[in-house]
Length: 605
Image (cartoon, rainbow, N blue to C red; front, side, top):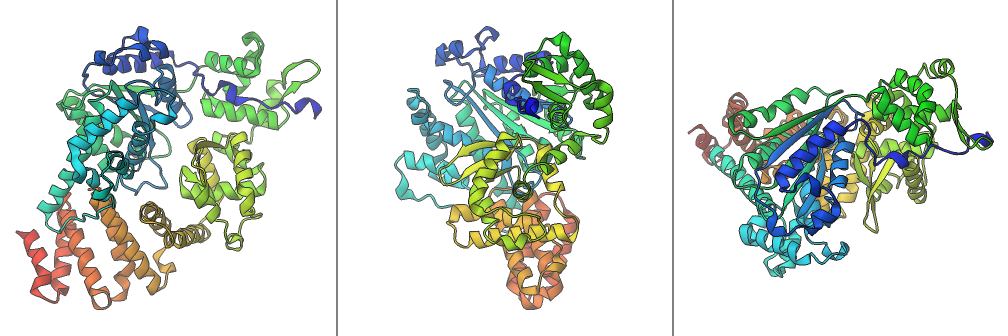
């Protein structure tokens, strides 16, 4: 036991890439082509020394990185950022990222919003960068304000609330920066016009930023969970000949989902019709030699000496990088890999013992679940609840979940609210979570990998018991929203409805159903204001479903008329004619006056 107190230091190789030289060269080639930097200048000193006037206007390009979960797609792109010195303080070079989340997939433009809000932070945080490029960023801010105007900026507030900073920095607080709910009217032409106007303005904002810098690299992780509107936005940007210096990098996970081919094919049309240059990179598992180099670096041991351990690891993991690292940790936990304080080196068991002891761990999910189950039960409870909130979560909302510990009676041990910060630090130390940003009163964390979030979620009860978890989380968030400011209410709204919409509607009483219908309607209006019509329809359909069984035309006439009128216009605008006709017949059958039927007649015209 004394000889096994030294733990593997996975962070020592976290920033290194193994067996990806070909892929790195492909990324470097595209980066140089879009940015105008030659490959010899792919280091920090040379990039920062370049004259901004040498930044040419290059056509936009797209890189799609695909592969099974755990093959290192995000790590490859992160390495591209580090190798090219494309951090927030690099002159004229911006790198922003957003991640689509399976839990929050009905939230419109979720990853787009995350990336563009972080871009606003970059533009207006020169005092944090230690470099005198404030004028450069102020110039971009002024260009955005000049091109979009106050009205255009306000139009984008639903997706990019931090654009308020541009108005504030420009000294225009008197114009007001409150979000305006611009819900389109029912007429299909008006709805299409609203959508085109929003997308035109959003594209104009991004185009203005891109055309005033050397390169904007926009990494969108987990495209398989992207909403159609986000995909459409990417296509519009890439095919807009006026948008220069934009490099979009998307990662696509090819296991556990059924939409990968569809997402990749979304971009096939622009590649063929618009001659957009798309670089496709597929990541497979690592070969045995690369895994051996990784293990040699991790154990600080000669590669010849680690070959026997590598063969055992490769036999079990097939070279999946995430599986390799989890397997090595599991070996140490099982006493099959340890550091000898007498010999001052790592020692491991023979292959036969490793294979027999680890035979129950058939895949990486088993290892991650076991790793979490070895954590203190209070930390397990925190991870399970956090997995329901999304891939990213902040401590303020997480702590809110434990205000009333008695509601989680199905969990073995419930942490005290004051202990959560310590538990989260432990999770970071164990490689379960990553700390993203410290905002003072609240810290944002993310799961270290999709597998970790999925495994944490898998530990929750199933069936009706799982619905109860989502129900209680929704109730706690709803309580928080009632005492929050407008911007936070809108941020919470989508989380709230997504929690409640995971619960069977038969669970709720009629009064609660009406409340949830109205919440879905609020979410639909915000989504409609940003012209995200796919999630808008989902929220509208949920709202209608919540009140359908309570004679809605009798008890909630005005509300039902409003829901159906907005729904039929959006259904028609996206080509769902049958659904639109059903709603038209529903309104004509139940409308009390000619005035209430007019929107229907306008649509039929």
